[in-house]
Amino acid sequence: MITALHHVQLAMPEAGEVQARGFYGDLLAIPERQKPAELRSKGGCWFEDSNVRVHLGVEGDFRPAQKAHPAFQTSDFDKLRKKLENAGVLIQSADAIDQHARFFVNDPFGNRIEFINAESEF
Image (cartoon, rainbow, N blue to C red; front, side, top):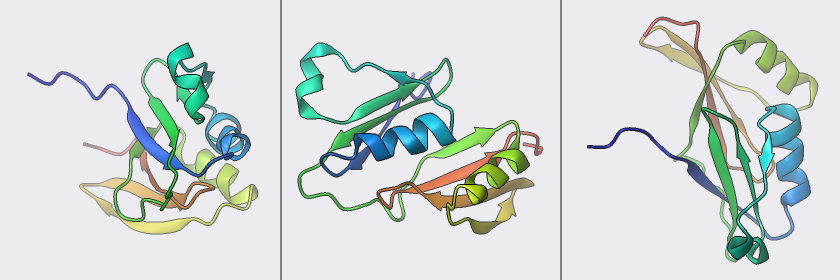
């Protein structure tokens, strides 16, 4: 019955759009999509391409997600890891699971993000 995950929404504090664009747009290279007109006044921003949709919404009483997290597959795992390290993002190494190399980072707001090597065997 469920055929796909349409998007993941993460919370961010008010006025965090510049930081979100720097992380999700610049570092992760997910293009920003303009939010629908009826949602723009609420703040936040959306990043989408053909396979990934991440929506960041402003939460008044913001608290970062420190356990719950999206896990993104990457086709160039080592290059992305190095890019994030060079940008000063703290990498949290993780044991491989089912032969999937992986690591965690926090976005600029403290939300936990996992990256999984798409080249690893499933």
